[in-house]
Image (cartoon, rainbow, N blue to C red):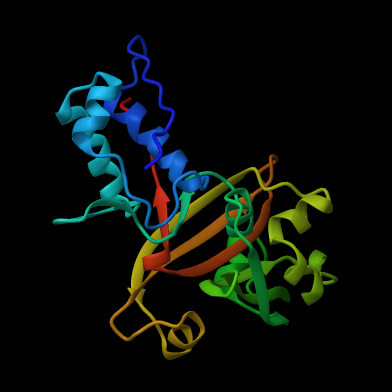
Length: 244
């Protein structure tokens, strides 16, 4: 079992357990630790870093709670099966997968023009606006992760399915000089439809993580509206909350 290179700054106002948890999270998400790897035991880690066992235990529990580590009686602690861990920042799932060294793939299920009053209002357009509507299946290699519905203004009617399968939507927008700078997101959960179960290879009992997003450019102009659903067992969102 290789030892990770970890550094604790005792002069920092950031809690020690949080410093440790952040470094361990990075080691997992950047691939230094792989799924199934045995994790350094709590006692040894505490002694090596000159930390108390409760501090190390709390850091490890943070990763267990996020689904990054798995504890099994008699087997110790191991790195969990790979998930996508999205921090709350304005990136696309394609960007997140690529940043982690994964192989993002896209299947365009439909690319049409349609009227959708909810999406039109989110884009600041009349209810009867003729929007660009796309449905994509995002995969990590051969593993399906998400079904993504997105709507754009008619100005992007020339975007092709080939472009969407070759790159992420936000990369396509940035190449056209449109840079999403702010988004309002709502995150929830629900049961999958029959079509979603088929596309994402889910059982009837497995839930979906959902996210709707309204993205804006730096001037406040709407850029896109999205309604996405993810395999809950393969996806999590990391949030850091600061005291005001």
